[in-house]
Length: 466
Image (cartoon, rainbow, N blue to C red):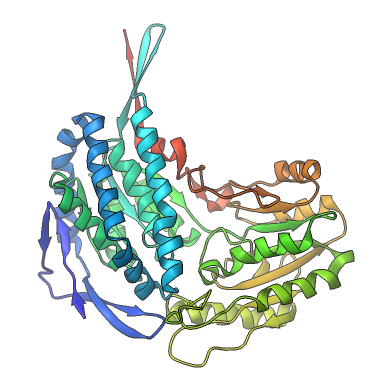
């Protein structure tokens, strides 16, 4: 079992207080590593180092910053198999899925950020004034456990390219992947303090970053409950907050759609990462008159998925990330049995690990708990509607507004999509890209990640009159 360190000011720092967090492989229940549980003193040291590094880094030629980031990207490509194996081990997903979706799947995102940075104009000249786009400063990046590589990409890469310095606090559930970021920074000779890695408990490290007077911005991805808490903590220092939070996204099936193709796409999001994705389309809104056909298709398609051991190279879907997550999903399914009709549940996995079978509920009331709250597991709720206006009303009947899908005749699907209050929508299986802006309406968050908008989350505007 590996014992890890903190990465502060270009050095690997041993934990002085012998306080560690054990990291479990959820697919086997084996302990695979220990990371430091940093305390306030260690977080302060990281922030102080970042603040000291900021002036030189922000004034560096943008081309030089790009070269550093490009070097980190080359390191990731060189280490892709090792990174994938780490994601596989600490997240509990199949190895091929870890490599293709969790690691290589975000390489295009890095490439796009670098391309945009090369073309970016940091000064805009107007009649009588100039607008300078300057870095925000010290960024506290708080990333979740469900995409341990990709979520760091969306925060650290744009922040560094725009001249910010970063203190990264990864989730204590899947912190091991973040060490490749520290290794990459070290490998390319990133100036000391520009990138700091501080592992620990959210209630300690995250709270210190959110309240620290020298942290200029907190970028947080996680639950809506967690985002609200971060916002409250950050309020006293009036720091900028970027939040990518929860979702309960609709997959809307219109009459005239290719039902089989549409349901394959929707279920693909529900079972992706064992449903541990904020953009999973876990509310299926379908025309009641085709109930029998739709339910048969859902069962048939679900049976094509192989839910199995994360150690099985033929498995499509692996384990939930922790016992806590397993218990949470199990609890929602028990609630669902009281609220709705259980249409289908796959066989339970026999063996060690937090494996949960695909589960489909039908005749779900739009206000039911399983239709309103984010479950973060492979659980689908079918809500039937009688007309398109009702479908739109149901789709918007949620505190969230992160993602969605609409399937049907092109013109009608576009009309429906325009009425849905959500940050992203796919029409008729249009290809998804991480390079588009991603973020939510309502309680799904504040700000955007990806694209030019993701870069500009990390700038301040300064106006100079001339």
